[in-house]
Amino acid sequence: MPKYYVRDGVERAIVDADTELEACVKSVLFFFNSFVVNGFFIISEVGFGEHEDDKVYSSSMVLDYISEKQKKRKKDGDSS
Image 1 (cartoon, rainbow, N blue to C red):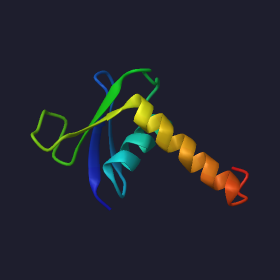
Image 2 (cartoon, rainbow, N blue to C red; image 1 turned 90 degrees about the vertical axis):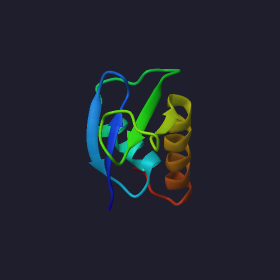
Image 3 (cartoon, rainbow, N blue to C red; image 1 turned 30 degrees about the vertical axis):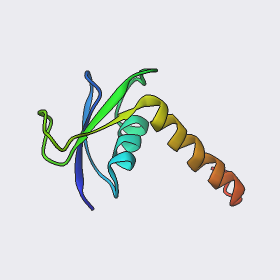
Image 4 (cartoon, helix red, strand yellow; image 1 turned 180 degrees about the vertical axis):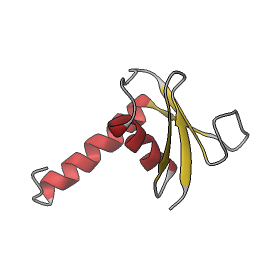
């Protein structure tokens, strides 16, 4: 599983995840103390500095992903 460096301008986390977006979600849910509406997250496989290959996800994209995962769980009968 790849290691990702996730930052939001204030907070940072290093997490293992299958994809950049999942790393971002994991950071938001388990490591960051806040969630900025209309903010963004920068994800890298190299480190916390700025890199050409960094991915940027908006906070609305992260919320949509979490919402869709939750809907799928409920549909599949998982109450958690």
